[in-house]
Amino acid sequence: PQKKITTKIMCYNDNIENKTSNNILKIALKHNVDVIVFERLSSNFKGKSSEKIHHWRKISIIKKTCAKAHIYGIRYSTINPKNTSNLAFDGSGNVQRGINNNYSICKFTNGKIYNCDLNASYNIGARYFIREHLKSLSETKVLEIMAKVPDLSKRTKCTLNTLININNILKVY
Image (tube, rainbow, N blue to C red; front, top):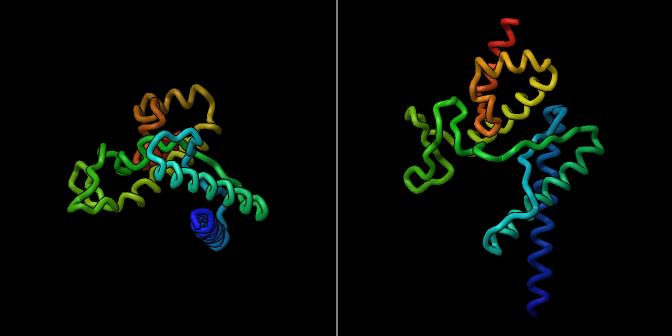
């Protein structure tokens, strides 16, 4: 009986994995995206057994989505996940999570109340575009921009506000 239950749970997990991957790809195709950006999740996750299983499923969803995206000519990219949900996208600093015992809402230091996942999504997208902008520039220009935008010195501190500041500087050039 234990093996039958385990098999059933694995089938449910596979189904969730397939549906999630298909939905991500459906949205990407609907909006004609060129790149799907994910957080880079390592496979050497340390934590409770249930957390490891949850983390493992995230990695398999990413792998399955990337394989399907390749068929449609959509590229994928990964970014460092550190501080994507801890920092406010407007550059105001760290966020406070769990307002009124609701962990999907966060409060910025300037008082704004925002959705945690949307805040993290802004930061994930911003980090991707920051990396792409800086790749195309010469080293001297990158150093000039770093002097004007100090958050760039540590990539894990980059937010949407950092990207906006870089774009404003690049308009001057």
